[in-house]
Length: 100
Image (tube, rainbow, N blue to C red; front, side, top):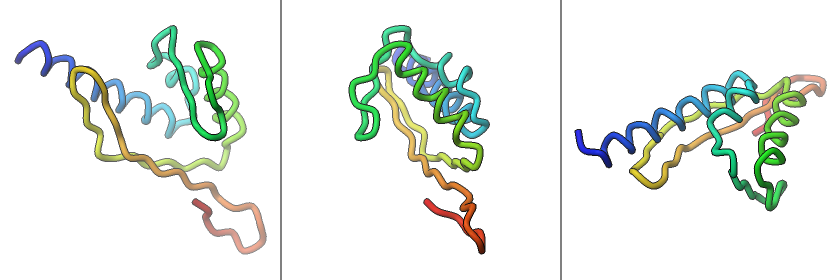
């Protein structure tokens, strides 16, 4: 196995660990997958770095007691990786149901 193939496999395993921890709402497990100097940005949480990015996951995992997550299509190369994930939350309104 070449070095780039080994790196790609390691990145895929890292992505799998991250989303498996996310499924369990294990913020510590998710944070362990991040580089110490991580940067994270999306519409809700723009420009987070380091501990602020890790703290965001802690907050979301603590508050997301009704979180259900699935992930698939994990792929990576030596430089980057991706996965498709979908979040659903159990509704607490009368009649139940799921929102996505």
